[in-house]
Length: 450
Image 1: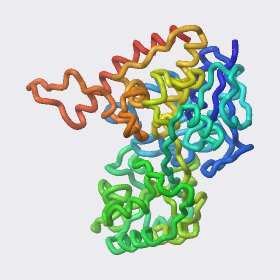
Image 2: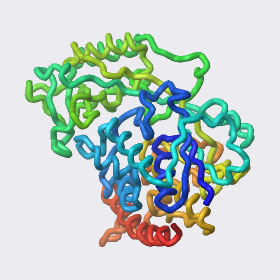
Image 3: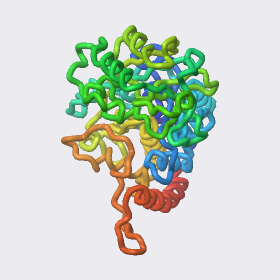
């Protein structure tokens, strides 16, 4: 049987390759690192996490991201299984030891007899005799390949900035000022390190963010940011109180060092590795120059002597106008031998990228077996995300999107026993219950197609 070629060894490419292999299809992964490096990656490992180590909420009842986690676990996702193996404390979120996670994904994949890993760049379109190709090159698609895709599709790719948060060593944090606590004591109740700020300290910090020297390559100017990964200084530019109502909000926390005084703002740090020696600054993605990051972030109470294991940075994200360019099973209309997966399709977030990789892998495997792919129900997280990418969104205004309940069809039965419309938190539960009922028959049908 001829192999399916997967270009890109990120989360989407790794998940797609695994789904092909476990479906009995030979797969070749083409990963350009280390021969061609990117501005964002620090290693050559498959499935390296770049922006954060968090897969976000793991609440499958009231959060669409957590629901997608559950669906992927039930579907046999490699990414979710490795995330669960390498998870670290993060309250109600699923966060991982990023090094252990990437190593686990790569080791599992390369140990499979049907998986071949080739360290090489695919510059330009794949050879014509590759009849099944999954392009999962993500936000850092090489210029040659991106240019070839644009020319083939007769469409300009859209671009935006993604920013990366810095990481500090735990033993460099001053715990006479810092303390462990999760907001509202979720998770273990002690999953985050908290650093309090008074009003004067907060105002001084915002002033420094606004005045700090930023790094902005000239050829990227004018590119819009993705709202879910805004640099902290861009948030500050939107209003002096934006941060205190956003990543630095002080709610649900009490400073044990001075419980009678309510902090005006709080910086939270989340564990970044299994050893608990590294912590990332939550919401502190930044385009500040490295020297400015050290100077400004060391003014945060508790980080005066901070040692930075990694400083923040920026990278460019490129994605297709997928509602216009892709068919319902993620194939390029102009060349159906090419299927796309991950962030390049216009989904946003680690778990969303992996989910689209899962779908691309299963669709390709089904076709290789000579059968017709079966789409996930629209009422599942899988289906809602796929539908948004391949036609549910308006092509003229298409932008990257995280999975959320706004992508799902409205519940049919949304009235309580008194006939009142169910709203808020309990309405989200309706979406989750309906998704679970729809998922199992689809998974059973998928199993018959492998």
